[in-house]
Length: 481
Image (cartoon, rainbow, N blue to C red):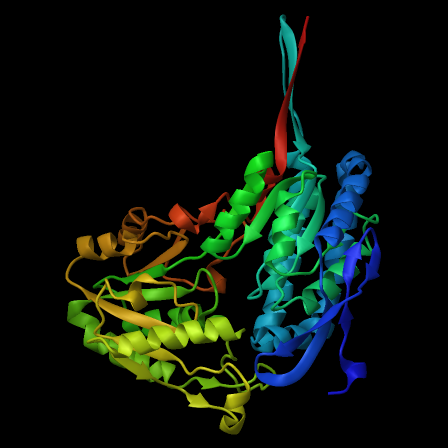
């Protein structure tokens, strides 16, 4: 690849794109490939971006909702059109396969369109008029919103914050992940061209830039998706100015197979919910509880299915999934596997390598199924965030539910059964933000459902109507007659 083919990705501040210092972003599947050169942000860049958003806020707030909606639909069209062009770039920086990148753009576009379509009704005041007084309860935007998004599905995760923030009249400063900044930023530039200058801004950088953004006194709301350790730092940075926060964090999502489940039907639907993005999805199936009486059959059939996966670069159409995104995550998963191999559990490596000679030049890992593992084992209790899934045998339904809930996390879960009423009854006992019955993958997501977690999986909700209240304040006005 020549330097001419490598895009330069700058900050977007007040409608202008600029960069001074640049750093290289490398393909996690071809480590010697430079995918993009991206601006290195500073606290001064954050300050300029926040002031640009703050200056744009009054006019955007006062723009009639139908006009904001019109502009957001135009921005959604720009995002959709960018998907075909930028999908391969997203693959090369993020490590997924092309179909996953296309899904990311499609879901992001859908979130933006759906949210924009809800906002006019949502913003209508609730009013009371009687002999004593007139009361109007109105929803007003918070101001400047900081959006901090991760690398695994950057388009849709950005839109989960950008869409409700802009639709309700806020302005935004977004910080992409340094591990996948290029395609998202170029897409946001195309969207910003449909909006007034300063309404949508982008600043790049590492943790110090995120901290400066969260702490800035003119930022009134932070929407963050990422890990729990970073979330603690977000809360610390926002505490002095009492900012509102929405935190969508990790999960260790259980799938509970009931004793009446159809094993073949379960595996037909479940596998994409385990290994999408090499298992690097917050709501992916991360531990599977199987009745002891069907454990061997389920484990054998699961291993047979998983062994059909081919792993390679995301632009190889033969690849079922691609490399892990970055070195730290790669080493974390390898370390977890090493610890598990030193236990009584059986670690089964499956699948096959595509272009095996290039594997040393990327963060590739074959899928692994961990059999005969205890519920209390680290591989069961920790969020693996890689192509590793433990199978845990249970003795009765009470134990399965207790173990499913025995976690500091509570993002998503699933129950698998041929009896819908039984599935619903068990689902109601699971401690999670979302519990699915007979599904657990991207197909499970529906914009009519709030998305977020309980316990250490987060604060607040995203998706559709549930997201809009996170970005407004209720302003109650009473006129005494």
